[in-house]
Length: 404
Image 1: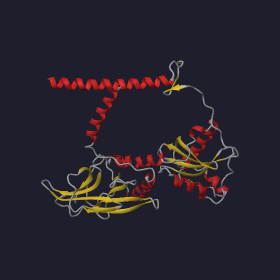
Image 2: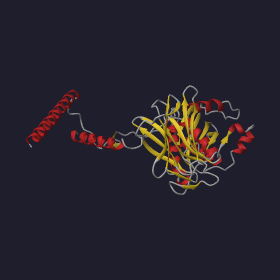
Image 3: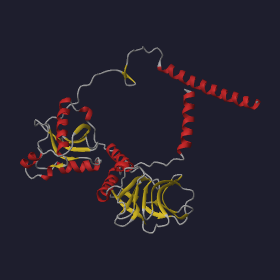
Image 4: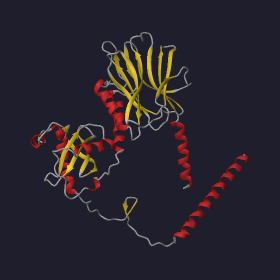
């Protein structure tokens, strides 16, 4: 055990020394992942995404310039409880590259844009401009440089302190950098992987979705649903996926609503991911399809033959937060097209009883031969002996080195 602990310590020290040179990774907290996800989604819908068949990409900036999001990330500039969202874009209409900085307001529970760094392409006829993410110890920065083949002509450094963006008059020193994009008046290169539909941005967006999905505190009752109820739930989820984006509030009568349930223009259902109980037999069901892992349906459990009534469906979406789920339940409980809720809540299914050790069946059972009080004394004695042996080994090695 001592050797094992020492090995882990050595591995940790070596790993820490190596990792200190790498770009730090800041993560969104549960309270703002969904909020930032909606901001990023709005940018994607408004501007599109810069992508290319090659990871780094190369685009001639003739007319028009590249247009769309190049990259986005979570940056904790001042190491507070609410990291910031930064979005790097190329704007064809304005002919510029820019970095947009968003903060989270806990008071209003929303994101607010606090700054934008804009650099136009046209003046860069003899120099190249470059945006990068910077860090020095615990501090985080956005850097911008203009340079040619021989020297750097301009170097700017930006950060955020207490929700306000600042530019340094004099730079903080030797800042480590991770390049994002570089450009001239006629060319554009990406320093992140924009192959496919911009793989780097896709990975980040999925990270936001994963964090948002994990922050829901409503009870996940997936494992408590009986087989019969789960079969009915999967059948309703299959219908929900095929419906596509759907909302019971779009229909004025029960006839219109039930007629709309027969439409099929959505996706192919794969499996139920989780089922969260919102109360009053209303459930938030997340499921996977052939197009996306993140899809959801709001359902009402009833005594009717189909068991679950579909109230709302969203495909390829950002998972909902507790606040959104609470509002969703409150609003949809008022629908005049709701079926009557189930009269009896479902019971948890029977489970096989087994004694397990580390997740495996217990094959042998031994009687207790040593009293717990005696075993505790034995543990302390062995621990003390181990300390003495390690100390003796250290003294022996020290004397041996002196003799040499």
